[in-house]
Image (cartoon, rainbow, N blue to C red; front, side, top):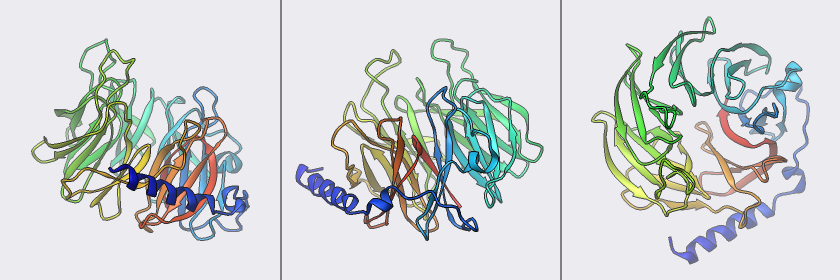
Length: 361
């Protein structure tokens, strides 16, 4: 992208955020007489080993935010490093990696409903049916099979490649095409694994670039994968990251867009109609799934230095609003920015420590 155009985008984004009222930036933590029927859960990772992960909730109508809703409602900490959240019916499942468990809440009352324990380092949960779900794992070399009704682990899918050097395969996000579940192996890996959900067995794999960080499947059954390229210090490898398009039916890579060496793209999301990609690579980029052109900057990061950075990204399928988090210094409460589909800034508020993902009610 031309430098002039990028500078204009950065200036507009900075001015829009700067013009927000202090009361909006430091939104008061108000009690609600009735919990809103629609809103956004913000999963705040917290610091590793500090047991300070938390959950926030944002009312999209009144723009009020309530932080630490799990602790304040249930008088117990959420856990150590919250990774993701998924909603099924009236229940929210919050995956806590370092604690090796999934906390379950009623999304209408925030009340604790139970937990799923016995996991190693869980990352994401994907429902196959009401009675079966998969949970990916960073270190277990297996995917746990869960019965959400009994809240028990009923089995495991072995994904190990029997190599001790890089602890492969770690599994991360999941997308589904028919009975097939695709999961990206992010840490020191370059594979997308294919699982048959009828037999709970791996049936294939797709080689991609180094460290596939996130993935989605669009309305045309194309799987999109962002790789981060690893790091200079990695013994596994270091390369320019990329955006890949994969045909889910043929399981073949159709096209690769390359970024610059040292870039770190991630947090790939789709809009509600599943025809436009959004992701972070310092700035927020937007890319129509039918486009063969290079992805373009959509929202410029307001941070020019290293004191803060865009970190988490979520697209509200009900309102088409975009939410982007800034973790600041990873110690204080981070910011969340809300934007319209045209890129106009709507609101800014503080969430918890390291706000990383969003779940829409």
